[in-house]
Length: 189
Length: 189
DNA sequence: TTCATTTCTTAAACCAGATTAAGTTTTTTG
DNA sequence: CAAAAAACTTAATCTGGTTTAAGAAATGAA
Image (tube, each protein chain N blue to C red):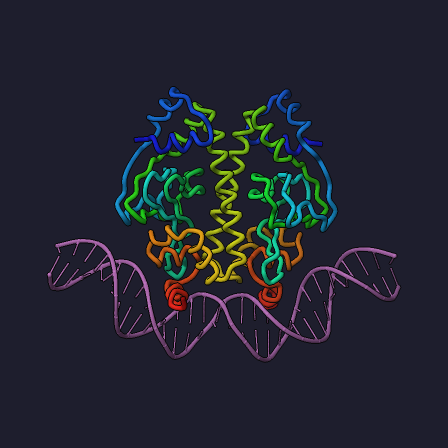
């Protein structure tokens, strides 16, 4: 049940059987159907989610009422609104299942406790956040240098399988333009 | 000499005298004059920099030849091109001193060694990267929801002192628009 | 197996911000 | 302190992408 997470952790650090057992009571497996909300705007984000199977998206509603998708998480990624999760403050975001999705969740309190009990996880999460920061640096570079059309072409080239998994309006909002414009780009090809 | 870094670390974890002494030989203090380069495009980024005093910026040159500033680092922030630093690959970025700047630098090799010798630093850097990731989430949210004018007004409100520290063309490129447009916004007020 | 809902497309009018180009002010340096 | 270099401003023109609005296609639920 928790094996996918253990497999992932063991790619970065080596946990003993004993350490794995300490982990178990802190982990909450659950499953969500398409369009279910794991977090809604105004709520405090209690959980950090590890995606076992499926796809989650993080989005907010801008002043004009449009959904803006800022992140997707697929298999083996962690996702949360960290401003809300770390400081237990109300969130501006929604976390929604883009597909039927299985997750392993950990609460903010358990997260802190766990890091004390299993210090090897400090290294694991240090490496996870290092990777997330690196991904953000690349992402921000793209946001600064690509036109809308280039973003789509490039994303399509890098992640052709993923493009098939989510509706176009979600992808458009992630890439930073309107669904109408995405249609226009696609019509050209 | 290394005190500013020890002070910063001790805000997050408590290092013993002994642990501090282990750190010392891994740290390289240096000073750069305005416009000096700490990293240039094409070079492999050897260092992760902690800013003691002054201001660094991370930027790249886009296809049109324009500078795009993706990050600033002031006192008590770490800065590097992590794609290049972590995997020792050539960088697309420049790191340049926006003011006379004192840094404490650590090489990629020493970084890895240090984390082994002083495990408490795993927690320190986990917290640093957690904070960087949180900052990126906020940053990306802003990039998705604000007009150019709102970005400037908002940044000015949040960091009035910083706006005075850097030339306007750097700020314009950080906020994602042209220096000409920044002039236009300022003229309106 | 149809009706309702969600998603996608098309096209015209529009606009925020870029581009271009010239001139002005400020800062740096010899 | 004078000349050169760097930084900033102004204004006209242009454009990539938005907005609005309507209809078509796909998906899902009963």
